[in-house]
Length: 409
Ligand SMILES: [Fe+2]
Ligand SMILES: [Fe+2]
Image 1 (cartoon, rainbow, N blue to C red):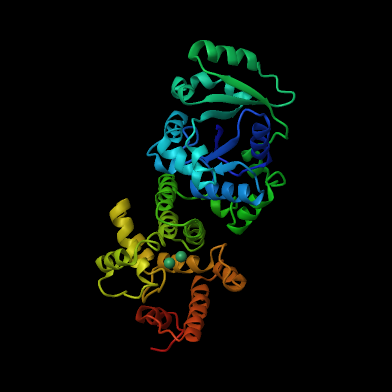
Image 2 (cartoon, rainbow, N blue to C red):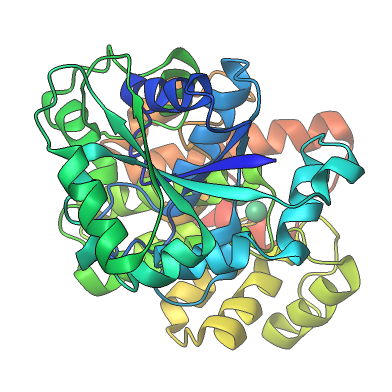
């Protein structure tokens, strides 16, 4: 098979990307396209607007939502430690151990997936001129040919670039015509005009309230921002898409609330983003980890992921900050004498933008100006739910409610 490989940030995905994919398929050089949303791009390390998992799932929903045929989205870069240089990605992607299972998982017949494949790295003609300055360009060409798009009116001297690459590196370059408009992700986010973003991506952006004031992370340190991006990549291994995006949304909202209530934004971002990290671990492992953080305080299956999470981030990520660990540990139940940070993560978990289990409008509105009242409203909703299910509330939750004046002492 002839396989096109298309890497990028897709922050956000726009019609120009889609045109690139469609035109590449129409060119006749390739049978399918593997799209790779970047994890640690050498040019944009931690400077993307969104951490990698949002960009990965946005692309996946777009490809599925638009019904793009012979287009597959790969998470290959999550398995690469450090910067995902093109040569490193291609070395992994073109290996039989990766490509055969990947193609069969995506509906290609086993026999076809085991054939010899030819790879084409898809790029714009503008980057063709600078290709020789890339990291290990010769190695890239060992794994794949280049497939460069030329836009109508493009005045790049592609023939010259092609000849130079051939002479200096001995690689093969094919050119195809790109039909479609020119646009850029940064232009979209800076202008706020999302008309060139395909519908499924737009829906995704709205659902998670992305590219808003909250996701700019103003007032968050570079160190915490980096930690947030890395935590997102780390959790990709342990959580399914929906839960991963939920827990990251809680990070963004917690940082925003921290700004409103004079709390440390860095700690809120990290505690919020990591709060559900242990939720999909095997239950025995959760129990054991929970015990190590809080003894026998939590034993109920639905709750233990909270204190297990504290152990998990402590041991796997080396996070020792007690404020962060406690905010993770008590995010489900709350407790007596809660810190502002604990209240924030408790609340953000229940009302982050993608939550829709009830009309959250009033609580969301209250959260903007009265933290305690918003926590009371949330705890009240939880109490009603427990009542209807005939469940007992945990003693630490009862203590929280007493503190907030919801129950008498
Ligand atoms: Fe949770
Ligand atoms: Fe949660």
